[in-house]
Amino acid sequence: EPEVTQTPSHQVTQMGQEVILRCVPISNHLYFYWYRQILGQKVEFLVSFYNNEISEKSEIFDDQFSVERPDGSNFTLKIRSTKLEDSAMYFCASSEYGVPSYGYTFGSGTRLTVV
Amino acid sequence: AQSVTQLGSHVSVSEGALVLLRCNYSSSVPPYLFWYVQYPNQGLQLLLKYTTGATLVKGINGFEAEFKKSETSFHLTKPSAHMSDAAEYFCAVSDSGANSKLTFGKGITLSVRP
Image (cartoon, rainbow over all chains, first blue to last red; front, side):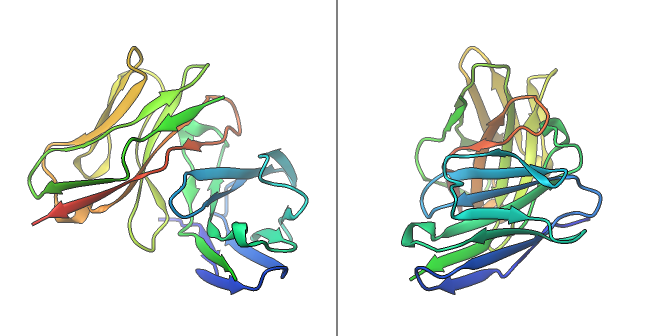
């Protein structure tokens, strides 16, 4: 069964450093998403991406965050200057049609720890 | 705006016992409702979903959930728990529009005692 692949599975970074989280969505999917879960809290929507541009972003997704689809396969989330509060599990998801009834496929997540 | 409430953070049941995980939602439009499961070191896997039609939906691994509009609930049940059901379970809501995002609850950790 096709999978969404996220790398790395764990990343530790120092506060103020830039990090890039990588995702390889399912090949025929057109809609891409990032969510995050701070330990003990809800899974929160960050951003959706379609046709090489952001479709929607949450209040969390401020100027420190950016997303990119640099080639035909990768979808990345960049945090320019990490803060302690960015420590979380980050999930990438993709969808073929972007319609909820067709479902989303999630990756296994990247656990980001900012020290 | 939409929201999901999953009361409690941990449920423990004995193997063979009924599993009941509660989910209540708030939505100003007809909701689409989902249950996801996360096993250790794995991604979020869709268990089942309600979009339209029959309010009792069946999912994988013997789970089912019933959409009750009057109670704004979408509780997840399984008649007989198995050790392999131990995982974290997330309820989520979205609207029906294109490119809609999911709004999740906090999740509930299910433990199954031998």
